[in-house]
Image 1 (cartoon, one colour):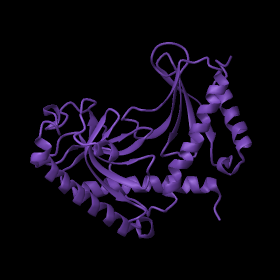
Image 2 (image 1 turned 180 degrees about the horizontal axis):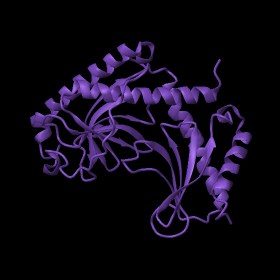
Image 3 (image 1 turned 90 degrees about the horizontal axis):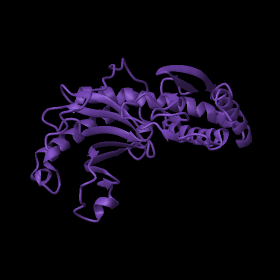
Amino acid sequence: MNSLTDVYITGSKAYNHFFDMLHLAMLESMDKIIISGSGAWVWRGYRIDAYKDLAEGLFYCQIDQDYPNNLIFKESYYFPNYKPIDPRDIQYFIKTGGYYHPFRMTLDLYQSRFFLFSKSEQYEILRNFVSYASSQALVWQHSAARGRPEITDKEFLQGNRKIQPNSLTRPSGYEQVSIDYLSAIPLQDEILMKLETIVKEALRGNYKWLFRNANWRNWDFRGWRLNVLSGDSADYTWEIHYSEPEKIVCYNFENGARKREGYFDIHSTEYFDQDSSRQDVLLRDFVNNSLRGILP
């Protein structure tokens, strides 16, 4: 039986395989598509910058980190002025806070038995889903329903012409996505949330803010941003990059320069196989060392 730390590492690799597979499936299924990487703490996926006459920059194919089993193809944008036309708009997540999601299709990876298939079969499932979802999105794009002013404000009819690209390198290939994929993000959440608690304890209230990374360009990592000193920018960050899931890397920002303070090795410490008190000790030592220059 694999250790929990090994499950986290293999699950994180499977997570990367999944996005390589999805990227290639979108390129193959949607002729001449242009995509950008889009992600932060709560989501990761691809924004569709151009595909036929689909509204520019409003459609996404992504995973919401709270529901890693659901692959979502949706139209989505910030529009707090949208007035629900039916109470079920809230129930079915058409409106969530200030965001509006007028079109959505979902593939449940677990219920579709995705993880039981070979890598070529998995790729076929993703390609078929993307092909069908994008064709349905075009039906929605051209429909009288989407054109109704109470459904789509005129500002969004053709999309966002001011989008900035976040281009990604085409993957060279992909591997089979193991079911450990489903464990990667929940375990990552666990260590990041404990890290938050320990950072706050170390600073004893002597900081301005500690925020999750939220910029849509943060496709490569998840982590925390800390402002201690002055201004509006982060002075420290703690980041777990998808390419190095075994490390939490701390960076310090001094005079606009990004300096690596150190890192915590999840794998070599067998972090997830330690009891909670030992996990606290390991992370506390890492945080105290990272913040040694400013701790009260």
